[in-house]
Amino acid sequence: MAKDVEQVTEQGEYSAKDYHDPPPAPLIDPDELTKWSLYRAAIAEFIATLLFLYITVLTIIGYKRQSDTKIPGNTECDGVGILGIAWAFGGMIFILVYCTAGISGGHINPAVTFGLFLGRKVSLVRALLYMIAQCAGAICGAGLAKGFQKSYYNRYGGGVNTVSDGYNKGTALGAEIIGTFVLVYTVFSATDPKRSARDSHVPVLAPLPIGFAVFMVHLATIPVTGTGINPARSFGPAVIFNNDKAWDDQVMDLLGWTVCWSCGGCILPSIHS
Image 1 (cartoon, rainbow, N blue to C red):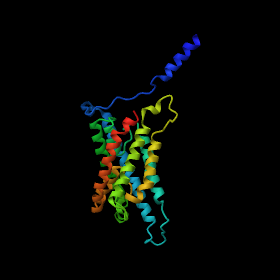
Image 2 (cartoon, helix red, strand yellow):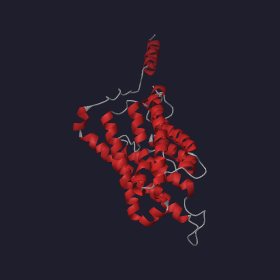
Image 3 (cartoon, one colour):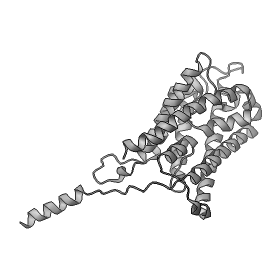
Image 4 (cartoon, rainbow, N blue to C red):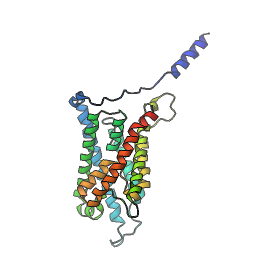
């Protein structure tokens, strides 16, 4: 009899909900503006996005410089190639999300921030401050890259996102929608509170799948658009390089991100609830 009671107790323990599902974030929380943690998080997002743009833009410029056949001794096979550029983007996201996850959540991307806002994971105040910090960080990061290598920056396109020759804007738009959706879906999956449940057999270090998602999307879409999937990443170089084509293609990228924000922010939370 005692064994039966013990078994029932154990079954009751395991059948109970053993993970914490945080309540929805308030739409507007004025008290949040009085907390240092909010501004510390915004600073973390600014620094992370600055470092992200600085490293990745210089990687792109370095590859184009090394593979420029107009320079004596260079061949098209020199440099890190598309694979190396994809690793630079994915690796930096892994590193920076790991470093800032405990401070700001490690968004480093207005698309991710806005998707989490639509999913009621962050408040409107926090989302707006994050997106401002991310865009400012991206501009500063691209500006630093130009400051250190101005001649190469101007000669090799400044790392801006534009629709590649041979592709139309419809194809580029589809690539951006799907690529951003893959990233936002991975973020929601990797940060799902059910991951901490006792019966979950898929423990995940969140920065790892997020970084790999960025890496895989870049492999697929670098030949099409240079891979945006991040408004700050595209906006920062466009501001510093200030090229008409770059600004024209920003409209296409924005449409792609907007569609994906709606899907990621409204559909994914219900899938993972």
